[in-house]
Length: 126
Image 1 (cartoon, rainbow, N blue to C red):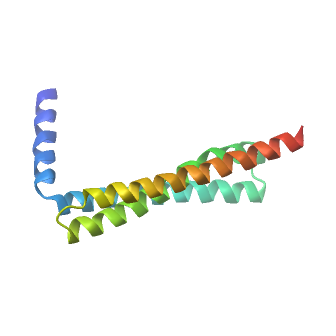
Image 2 (image 1 turned 180 degrees about the horizontal axis):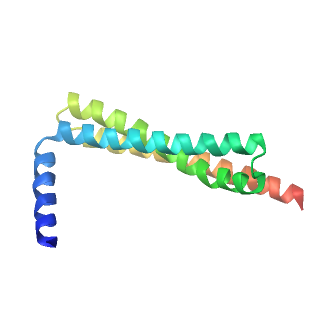
């Protein structure tokens, strides 16, 4: 049975790799679904924190969900750029690497500011 599953995945992977536009659109769909799920979770936790619903737990969850929310946003932006270049370009690899590098720098910059601000708030409370 495991061999049948592996064979089915190999057939699907071969089909998708043979058609890069469809493969890119499938990846874009996955990035959209990831962003939508994380955005709903993030804003639910954010509103629960503001509303005072289990404030101690929700504030901790808010701290840990924020980097995931930012990552999913940048993943969505990257996939939008990648799909546009795959559809319109013959060799999009260099542009994808360039945009991935730019978005990674932005992500780690926002993440470091987030952690730095929280650490300052923690030190002030001591």
